[in-house]
Image 1 (cartoon, one colour):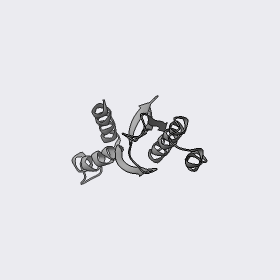
Image 2: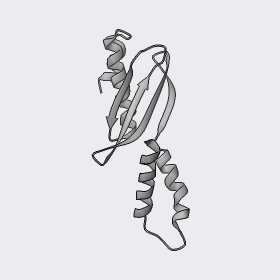
Image 3: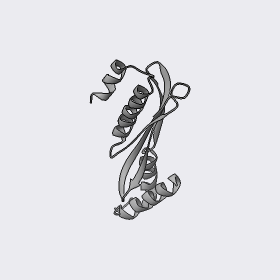
Length: 120
């Protein structure tokens, strides 16, 4: 599915880009592919003394671009924080907040630990 969405987006962008003299579509493809691939991101982070992972990926909902975020800490928490926002950075931020709320409900962290993340 991810490859299909990427391909459709790439083809749509290529069709919408006006041709300029001396620069064919072949010259634009590498930069378009780089921008599309850059929409996916995942990494590892230390969070409250635990090794955790987070990711963001684009998705379409009602023909609009959204970003799905996830945060999880294997070996510490049996759940995943999730979000869907319009911004890439917001996806990770809201997934982290969701993770913190779930950790608080599961008594893995204290209210004092959670307050920093939930006040915003």
